[in-house]
Image (cartoon, rainbow, N blue to C red; front, side):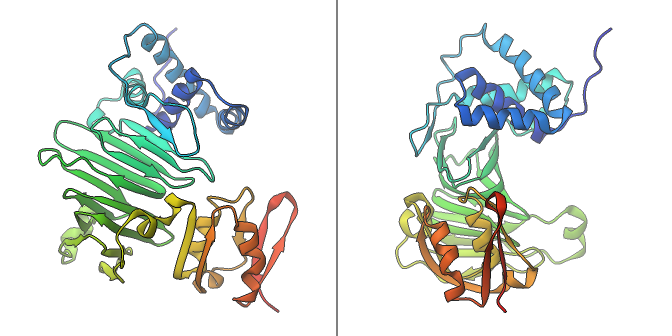
Length: 329
């Protein structure tokens, strides 16, 4: 008796395909533990992975030398067959009967906690992922599309007028006009910094909303300019950068975290992408406090210890590495 096709979950299939690629190359002990934990989370994870594993039986009989684009990790991780991961994600979808492959991202990439990862796409463009960040990528004959699912990334795009390159984060779409830029999915906001060239930024309202409200015109921002997009609010220019380079626009690529009048909620969200434990705010009102600070990515513990010196808060450390930030008093 044949097994009935399982329900499609494109995000899950991409993660499963990514694990299949990683296992084929060999996992470190830490990655093996992460993989086992992921499998144990839900039965659906095991079924999706088994589908991907069957795909690898087929891929093992193919000549994959043409799929040579590699991924590099800033911290010396091994080379990666990114093109094979893209093929695996597509083949998994086909295996279970998914008919609309044009709507399925063809590759998924993510970085670990505290890791900065460099991914070279098949078109020659480069994406640098910040810690604990994730993207989905779909490249076709008509365009190149990236969805920033979490975290932040720097994009160095090979310009191709016939194949626009766009990045979507929440309700915001950033379209490359020949450039290098960063996109960050912060709590409640999307931020765009342009390091070189020009980008177009616009809201991507659902069709029903777009039909009921006056659409905001797209904005073009150029080298050194920044912009913030909040759901339901107009696009807001930010103070331009005096020097437009990666060290200023994306200090995390240089191992630094820099904040100027940032919300504590954003700072905590970032620190959780670098800290081995979990940092929490005792109440949402604490998230509105403002922070100006600069620290190395390995100085999270020191920063938390000094936080009560600048804000009316108390930092409480609990078992299991959990840290809770509470109001002082």
